Image (cartoon, rainbow, N blue to C red):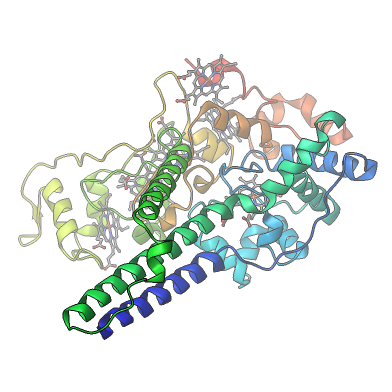
Length: 425
Ligand code: HEC
Ligand code: HEC
Ligand code: HEC
Ligand code: HEC
Ligand code: HEC
Ligand code: HEC
């Protein structure tokens, strides 16, 4: 009967540890940002300035309440220790990530990571306005809408992401209580069997009846459905699609660890429309010699030999090669024209902006949504690098406007990047 007692202790311990790990995840040092009332003219002006800056610089990757390419920005003030640190992040994200700050570790460990653009030109005042806008997204709205607006701003600020965790903890606590009750019952039966006297009115029985069990199961089911629903919304089209491949090829191992350039394998990416997937002959440049891997030993590399028609014992090709049938992950519809060299070579955009931190992928996946909105948003936001490309002479007019200061920047949209026929046949 002592074993039942130790089960109970174990249960209490599990609940404690789970609660601590779940909550510690969401608790960081925070800094304060004021709420702005609709009547506060200065505050409203600041929020409006922040909104304009946000739309011009951040909206291509961030929304306030949902994940886009970057995380939802609501509640950043609860995640960052100080506004000064957040400023240094916005000014130079990659430098901050290398700074050894504890929050840099948190950001690095996020699955959503891609490369955030650096904004060295934004002043602390401007960053503060952006934050004020994120905190008070509706403060700039017309007066009638204001009361409802402040209410949603408050709710969005903190509780939003945490309710789910709290519900889960609540569920665990009650479940533990239920199991506790069951063990008491077993205790009792054993005592009765042994002919010992037992207290016939256990406290637990009043609290935990069959009804509570049903309610619990219902709550559990609801939480599960909510979880699945959230997952489905995030997936969008095929975003996140990461199929099994005929050979377990790891970008983390080849690009991250062994520092092989993307272009070594995706030879078309700077020259043509398609990046192209490497054939066996490219793999064999190295795998004639590299016959064993750190994770799968000879197993996966043997598959390359099989496709290539290579006999590692005789060290020569003994058969004609077969194509490795890689499962295509990215797939734009046929009516869309997308050109890699234009983006990578002419536009100077990093692979990671569209494909995520490939150097960390064990399994390749579709990082971006590939929706029309995604293409067009970036074309509206992204400045064309005039000095480095062929549009230099063609767009003399823009050049002069830039010089005179009548135009702040020329975006891809300005040079026609939102015209239908540019992307559609
Ligand atoms: C090119 C896409 C992109 C743009 C543009 C961009 N961000 Fe980000 N941002 C990201 C990504 C991706 C992350 C996640 C980084 C990580 O987890 O390592 C991020 C993270 C952040 C974070 C940290 C979020 C957190 O949960 O702590 C803040 C704050 C932030 N961005 C602010 C801004 C602001 C302000 C702007 C506009 C001035 C901006 N970002 C523009 C992609 C972008
Ligand atoms: C050693 C060769 C190699 C290198 C280096 C390499 N890749 Fe790949 N890549 C592959 C192979 C093989 C596949 C197909 C298998 C897979 O999807 O994992 C692939 C698939 C991809 C895909 C998905 C293709 C699809 O089906 O839609 C993308 C995107 C990609 N690579 C991007 C990159 C980027 C970005 C880099 C550099 C940071 C890089 N790769 C470096 C070999 C390589
Ligand atoms: C530029 C050289 C180079 C090229 C090209 C290359 N690999 Fe590799 N590959 C390596 C190295 C280095 C290792 C790791 C060996 C080690 O760490 O022991 C490796 C390991 C592997 C492994 C073993 C993984 C494991 O953990 O067991 C597989 C599978 C693999 N490569 C597949 C491929 C495929 C498929 C291609 C062609 C698309 C390819 N490699 C192209 C250099 C290369
Ligand atoms: C502006 C966004 C963008 C950038 C930058 C970008 N890609 Fe892509 N990539 C795409 C899109 C969109 C597709 C899907 C194309 C399709 O289905 O026709 C794709 C597809 C691919 C594929 C699948 C094969 C193919 O050619 O369709 C590979 C491999 C790939 N990219 C590698 C790279 C590498 C390597 C880099 C950097 C040198 C890079 N990409 C930069 C958007 C981008
Ligand atoms: C991360 C930003 C980004 C994304 C995402 C992006 N583009 Fe672009 N795109 C650019 C830039 C920058 C240029 C301009 C390159 C230059 O200087 O010519 C460009 C140019 C183009 C052009 C030529 C426009 C012209 O006027 O000559 C086409 C067509 C195009 N992109 C199609 C697409 C399609 C289709 C997608 C989505 C599948 C897409 N782009 C996604 C940044 C992006
Ligand atoms: C920067 C590139 C770009 C431009 C400019 C662009 N589109 Fe698209 N469009 C796309 C992409 C990418 C898709 C595929 C989206 C998907 O698969 O969900 C698409 C899909 C579509 C579809 C099909 C929708 C569907 O559900 O399959 C229509 C219709 C369309 N575009 C019309 C237009 C019209 C009209 C314009 C001009 C006003 C335009 N597009 C301009 C990139 C572009």
